Length: 309
Ligand SMILES: O=C(CO)COP(=O)(O)O
Ligand SMILES: O=C[C@H](O)COP(=O)(O)O
Ligand SMILES: [Zn+2]
Ligand SMILES: [Zn+2]
Image (cartoon, rainbow, N blue to C red):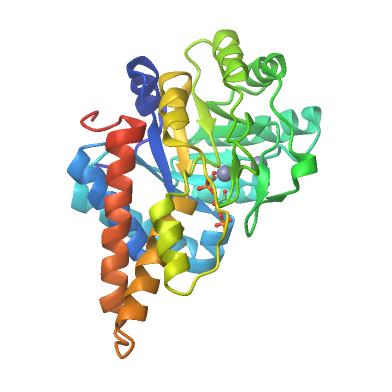
């Protein structure tokens, strides 16, 4: 089966009250762990690549890994650019075989965001590629995504509706309280579900995307800290809230931090317990298994996308 766009996936997810997981990929073990889990669960899948991933692994290696995953799994897989910050990077990915791109011009003002997004939509649609955009700002800190808490702004529902109509975008990432990384909430977790509901009412049948949706699973944080790590006070989005969002207008749930934590916890544990081992396959194998287990859990118990091919 060739790569697919997200159009059909989102239509089914919207109607079925579940979400499709979009997992960030950076190397072979991560791709294999995710795809093996999706295969076991017979789930549709979005594999997404950030600018940082393209810098780390090179575009061509990631595309070839995903092509291998397609052949190996026979699943409907979309290959998506995560947080493209310019027309040029989106064009590069459209030309380079992706079936979906995100133009994140949310750091610009509304009119400029509309203008850049429209330009990407025009080019992508002419090449059979779908487009995700972002309105509102998420808080959080990661390599190529760095917005201070003070900058974070929740999405205005009326503006979201206007933005979608003006740009012709296929899906929209909104800010309702999630953030990137492992430190999402200082106190009790809170997501603005009334805002999400309003967006859903103003944009019927339109797929919404939730970024910063890792739940920062306590077992992985504890394992990292037990075996020499130092990530105190990490906190993610409770899985109960993700389930609720998936039943509403959210059709795509982005997960990266949980992959990083699963992998790092496993590598730390293995190396601490086997100090004389130095064969990378010995610690990357279990790390791949840890990713597979975590992703299978998400698909089955959180996203609800098992057996939805
Ligand atoms: O939104 C993300 C990628 O775009 C990932 O979010 P997390 O940091 O919560 O995994
Ligand atoms: O949203 C950001 C993703 O987690 C990707 O992070 P990255 O830019 O460090 O690859
Ligand atoms: Zn953004
Ligand atoms: Zn994101």
